[in-house]
Length: 324
View 1 (cartoon, helix red, strand yellow):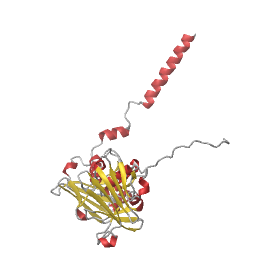
View 2: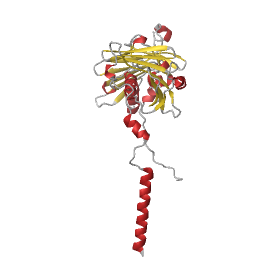
View 3: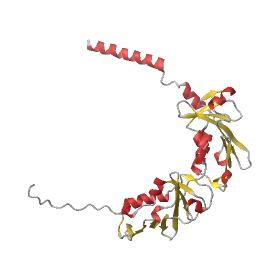
View 4: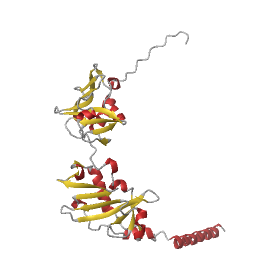
């Protein structure tokens, strides 16, 4: 009897499995999978290595980026060094664009998707100004995980992954490289911090331990010095200031500064000027641009001596209270 029941159950299972395979067919590719596999690049002959010039047109303004000796500069901003990672991200996005997710081919819908002059227009050219890619980047899709794009000479609008307007249009943050300093913190042997209140001098000893020499002589908190060096050696600006006389920014006779002395004697110095709108004007001693840092970021650099004091836990005293 049990054997007969097992056979019935086994047969029922096989029947149900066949039904599932017929109805669901997990081995059949979905329409979406087919589209992805059959998708072609929007710019099939695009080679990001050939791009030597980029024009970004947004909100009525044109920003031009140029590649000069393998370095990108913001041509429209006095050839200031460009943020190379942002340029790399833009080029990679253009190379990835494909037609896997068509949205519309009606030119009347371009304004709705902002793939016209209301969006961001990008032109990518080679060294001879030959157009390699010309496109419009529109608004986010309703899911906010992708954006609309359109090739300039086509009415077809596609969905592309990512919040792309921020990739192509940097707005007030601009395409400028925001790096103030980028040096190896491991070769720093001395740190000097001056402020209106005091001068702090930290030196690395023979055992690679940081010691305070001013305003007092004491062992320094190694973690605190390490955090300071990390912030200082990878310092990026929060904003750029207009080119004016140093006196207008309080940088002609700065009252605060921080210097890192490298093992070859090189001094890397940041001068701090006056505060305006929650930001302070700062300037590298050896560079022309004037930057702006939020006060909290300046406070992470211009630290007082008590921040570097080694925390020493007092020894426990023996309890001699006879009542206990």
